[in-house]
Image 1 (cartoon, rainbow, N blue to C red):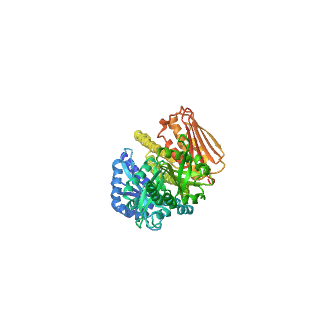
Image 2 (image 1 turned 90 degrees about the vertical axis):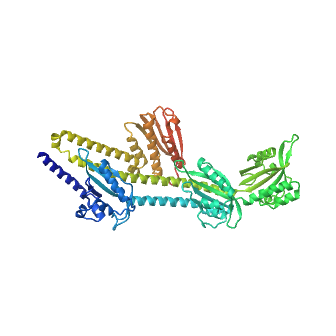
Image 3 (image 1 turned 60 degrees about the horizontal axis):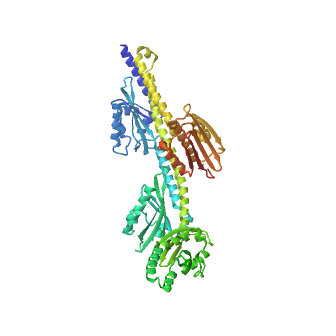
Length: 638
C-alpha cells in the first residue's frame, strides 16, 4: 500500500497548493480538467458576487455568464480557450475583454471595465494536465489612460492646426485660406479664411473631398485628385488650379499650393496647403490675351485696358545695338496700378534697368531677354529687396510683336501666410514627436504589466513543481526527481529570458531617478563582456526634457545593439556632449566596417527619421572603425 499512501500524501500536498490561491489579491479560479471548480481566490468570489459554497456547485457556463460579456460571442470564445488549454497543455490568452457585470476592486459598485484573461495549465511529472489556472486581470485604468492620452494628442494637434490671430489676419489681408488633409482618414480641416475664400461662412459645414468635388468644375476633379495622389506618393510639393462654384453660383479660380508632412517613420501623414483666389487675375489674363491680339496696334485703347486692370502692367520696347542684340528696355506704357505701386507717374520713356537696376540681380532681365528670343511666355515668383522695395511678386512676361508686356502682382501676403504655415509645421512635427514618445512609453509600460502577470504564473508553476521535489523522492524515484528538476529549470529559464526581454522594452527607471548619464552607463554595462564600451560625458550639468532624454537613450541603445549584431567588434566608444545649444552623441567601434548597402534595413532608416523629427543631423562613417555622430538642437526651455 506504499503507492496508495504515496498517492494520498500527493493529494494532500496538491490540495494545500490550491489553498495558496484563496488569499492572493488577484482574481484566480482553479478548474479541474473537466472544468469543475477546485478553488477560487477571495477576490474572484467578490468580483462575481458568489460564496465559496455556491461556486463549487456552479457549472463553468453559469460562472462565466456572471462576467456580463459585452460581445455575445465572448462567452463561446472563453469556453473555447479553456478547452484548448486542457487539450494542448499550453497556456491560452484572450485579448482585451469588456465585461459589464464583473465587480472591479477599485469600484464601489459593479462597473463596466476592461479585462485580460489567461488560462494556464499545470502539469504533473508525466506532462498531464492536473488543473487550469484561470486568471482575470483588471486593465480598465490602463485602457482609460490610453484613451485619455489619445484624446489629449488629438486636442494638441487640433490646437496647432487652428492657427493664430496672425495667420487669420494674413489670410484676410491676402485673400487666402489654408487647409489640412489627413492622408489616413481623408478628413479635411479648413481655416476661417478658406471657408470665406470659396464663399461660405466659417464652420458652416464639415469639408470633405466628396463635397469639394460636387462644387468643382467637372473638368478639374480628376486633375486635382491626381495632383494630391501624386504628391502623397512622391512626397513632393504640389500646385493646382481648381474652379469652384460659390453658393451664389459664381465660378471662382482657386490656386492651391501645398506639401506633404511625414511621420517619424517617413510615411505620408497629411497635406498642409494654402489657397489664393486668382479669379480676377485669370479674368484679366484672359481679357488681356484677347485684347492684345485685337488691339495691339491701338495705343490709346491699349492704355485704356492697362488703366482698367487691378494688376500692375507695363509695355516695354527693346533697345537694340547694331547687330540686333537687346541691350535694355524702355517703358512705352504703364497702368495706373503700376504707377500707384511704384509711386511714379514719370516712367514712360525711362530706361528699365536704370530705374530698377535690381532686375539684373534677380535674374528678371535674363528672363525678359529669353521671352523676346523664344516667344514663349514665362511666369516667375521672386523676392525683390532692391530699389526701395521689400516684397514678393508674381510676374508674367508675354511677347507682343516687337514689344514685351509685363504684369506684376504683389503676393507678399500669400508668402507671409505660407511662412506662418511652415513655422506651424515645425511646431507640429515636434508636438507629434513628443506625443509619439509618450504613447510609445505608455505602451511599453502596459506591455510590461501584461507580461509581468505571465511571469507570475510561471513562478507559481515553479513553486508547485518544487513541492514534488522532496528529498526522499530523489532516493525512491530518481528518474522522476530529475525530470521534475529539469522541467523546473526550464520554466525558470523561460521566466529569466522574459524578464530580460521586457527590461529592454521599458523605459528604465534609472532614467527618471538619476538622469541620462547614469542611464547610459547602465546601458553599456548590459553589453559586457561582449562589448567593452569606453564612455565620455561633457557638459551634462542639467536635465533635459523627458522626451529628449528618452530619444537620446533609445538612439544610444539602437547604435550599440547594431555594433553587437553587425559590426564584428569587441570594443566601442560612446561620447555624449552638450555644447553650444546642441547635444552630440558619437558612437564608434573597432570593427572592420560595413558598406552602406549592407546596413540597409538594420535600423538606420528609422533612426534617421527620428533624428529628422528632432530637427537634428547625422554623420555616418561606415568604413573601418565605423563612427556615427548625431547632432540634436536643444530649445532654450529643454
